[in-house]
Image (cartoon, rainbow, N blue to C red; front, side):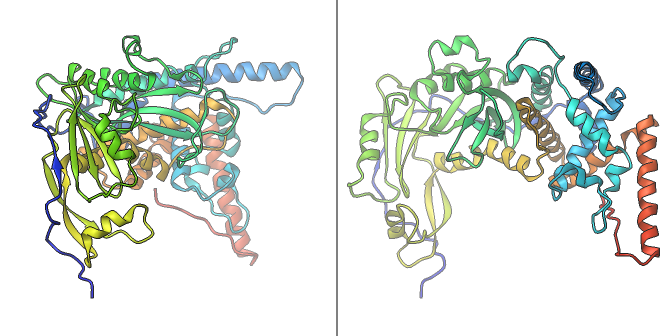
Amino acid sequence: MASTTAPTTPNRVPQDLPDYIPAYHVEEHDPELSLPPGVDGSDPLALFDLFFPQHILQQLAANTNKYAADRRAKKATKKKKQRAWEETTAAELRVYFGILIYMGIHPGEQETAEYWSTADGDPLYLEITRHMSRVRFEQLQRYFHISAPVDQKIMVFEKLEPLSSHLKRTSQQLWKAGTHVAVDESMTSFTGRSSSTVKMPNKPILEGFKIWVLGQGGYVIDWIFHAKTKGPISLDQKFTKDFSNTQAAVLTLLAQLQKEQGKSYMVWLDNLFTSARLFERLVDEGYGAAGTARVGKTSGIHEDLAALKLDKKRSRIWGEIHGRIGETSPRVLQISWEDSATVLIMTTVYTGKESIIRKRKKPSNTSSNARVVRVVFDDHTELELPIPLVVDHYNYYMNAVDIADQLVAAYKTQRTHFKDWKALFYWLFDVALINCYKIAQRAGHWKKQRLFRKQLAKQLIRYRETTKVKTTETVACVLEAEARITAVRFSRKQGQKEAYVWLPYL
């Protein structure tokens, strides 16, 4: 019978590492919050107001009203019937945003109108219906605008200003980064017409907008939008002279990081970005670096290590490690390590000799390249095995952007739409919510994102009620909701098919 675990490690495997002295020394430090005086880190609304302050909401409301006036004026010339429109306000936009968050928490309804449905058997979402009518929500969905309307054609990314720039500044000001940051690509789905979307067949999101992101533990520090034909936009030109656009995106993002004097910082990259030349430049810019690498001239991987990666017929031993230092990049250590596949790594921080013991499970027979790894396990199902520290840390720190993507996907606010810029607005909105949550979590509050969002949705939806800001729309919504409740109760008394009122606790 196979044993379940064993504390032993395999026989010593071949090591071929140079005497490398790291070019960059790292002293660990945790991220810190930099909240304005008087801001309660446990209050979701207080944090939300940092990302969407009154002056930004007023600007969004003004631009929405301008766009609505323009659109309605054009329809009026065609003598088309239109519903009455009342100009929106910053207070009403808070309610609108709260409903978007609420819908993300309760995504069960396929059509927006179903959240206001009173048909028998349909739940009644009182938190929505009491504070905004379906018609008003649809109007705001139709006319909501971030930038001021202009006659000439502009890029999709320009339509996100001034909101995108404000959210960037706020994200950087409130979060003082710790030692380890990562740069990776993110995607937001959009399958409509746009000249700036890309297709990614091997990604969870197959088509949409690509964004280059600098993150830390799920917090999004900075980002650069990507256009299909132009690549990353708004790159710092001093980096594009010597590096590809992809690598220049890394340097541009890091240039915006607010480093504190005397503290060390390290960036983690995957093989899309990694090159020996880039790592040399990062040392000059004051960053340590590590990441997986590809075979090719662009990466600058040493020919000996490239040969090991490309030779599929050679006898491979799990855990075997080799290291080289390139002639043109003397401050960068290049490593190949044998796992289920040959892993190529570059670093300016590790020697390759550091290791850590991790529990590993025996791969199944169907796993790709499992043969090399299964030999180590013999008749054990689990083993504690030595893993190079650089590999272990890569697995931990490189997922900073992936964590943010997962948090967004759990309760995303994106609704069906046809305007390309709205896909990016929803992404920005979700990023702001994620950053609010990560700040609250860092402050020692709100362990679960769902509870944080529920509280924030309740505070925003009830904003006009709690601040005594009432409009004709507010009163109409309350009266309409009360009438619906009365109608449902009446039908019960008449013995008709029972309907029910759903009062989800926010």
